[in-house]
Structures are given as structure tokens and as C-alpha cells.
Image (cartoon, rainbow, N blue to C red; front, top):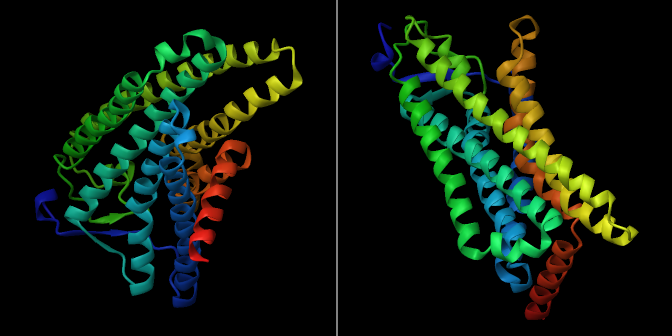
Length: 311
């Protein structure tokens, strides 16, 4: 294949060679996918239906759940379908769509996590200015900026990646179209351009991460000064779920993209990819619901209302 324009499809990595293991992979991913759909769907429904949750924190949480639904739907259904139909093929346009949606959603999600850290910082460290700084218009602009930054990052990566000639076959050593794996198929030095874009994106991610860390340093310093034990518990219950999600997201994603080649292997790359692309959207609803009494109470009211209507 002389260049990328002659490619009609790619071969992505399968999880197993035997039908029994492929079926096991399908069932495992199906369970995770349904859990993500159920968890994030419930959060979206509860926040949309309960007017008591019309606050900046839950507005951003609703956006996060929408992004999680899109994020896990970008890679998991195709992998499940390939296992069920015993194939590894993904079309050229399907691969491009995966890369675009992957960068769009992961960039928007991390930007939104940064905005959520700022929201928690203002709520705890500057409570008297919260209504002014986190008004409905300001929240809408911050959410739009998060989605917009994701879109621009996705356009940049997709355009750069598919403008690079690919002549080293069509086998992508990952269960979805991942940019570092596609760059290995390049046959010219132009791949350095995409590497530069990746480095730029990683620097932006680390900039957001440093902002989140500094915000939480000030948050925890303020929380520890709260005299009442109940006040400290409430503050921690608001912050710890968000911090847990950021830690999971950053640790797995960073390891996937900046790990040294010496510890790289197909099995390790596959496991890390599952950790940062499949696990977070499924566990995010669980992390938030476990420590959020308002969300649990609203969910109980919603379920009770549905049961009453059915009777």
C-alpha cells in the first residue's frame, strides 16, 4: 500500500483467537457498557427531572455524564461487534470517526473536570462570591468552552493523523484506532508533525492537571479550617468523588501515552487502554452516587414516583 489514500480499512486488535474467549470478551464488555449506560443515564435523568439539582455542580455533572456516554460508545460497541462476528476490520472512515470522537470527548471531559475543580474551589474558598462567579451564564460559557476545546483538538489530531502517508500495512495493535498505533504505520518523517501535536496536547493536559492540583491544595487547606466536623464531612463529600475521577483519568491516560517503550507490550498496552477508555465512564456514576446524598435522595424520589405512577 503506497499511501493512506489506498487504504479501505484497518485491522484492529482482537482480544482472543478462540470463539469461546471472544464470546467472553463480548459479554464482559456488554456488562460494562450496560452499566455505563444505566449509571450515566440515571444521573442525566435525575438531574434533568429534579429542580433542586439545578445548580452549577450538577449542571457540570450532567455534562460529564453525557461525555462519558459518548466516550464509551466510541470504542466499545465496535469491539463487541467484531468479537461477536469474528472479525477485526474497521473501515477507513470508521477509524477516522473513532479518532475524532475519541479526542473530542476525552479533551472535552478533561476540560470539564478542570472547570469542576474551579467550581469546587469557588464554592469552598470563596463562598460569598459563588453566585456572582458561577452564575448560569458563566456556567454555560465554561461548559461551551470545554466542548469547544475538545472539538478543536479533535479536528487538529484527525486532520494531522490522516494526512500522514501510511504504508506499513493496515494492522492497528489496539482494540480501537489509537493515534500512537497508527503512527507506527507511517512511512515518512511527516509523522513528527503529529507527534508534535500529541506533545502539545499532553502539555495542555498537564497544565489543566496542575490547575486542578493547586485548586485542591487550597480547597483542602480551607476545609481543614472548618470548625465543625459535619461541615468538613460535607466539603469532603463534594470534593473526593471529583478528585477520585481525576486521579483515575490522569493516571491511566498518562501511562498510556508517556510510558517508556521498555515497558511496552501488546498485553500491557491493551490493559492500559481498557483502563483509561472503558473503565472511567462506567465507574464515574458509581463514584459520584456513593458519596452524594442529594443525588441518592433525588434518585429515590424518582424511582418512588415511577412506582406510584405504575400503580
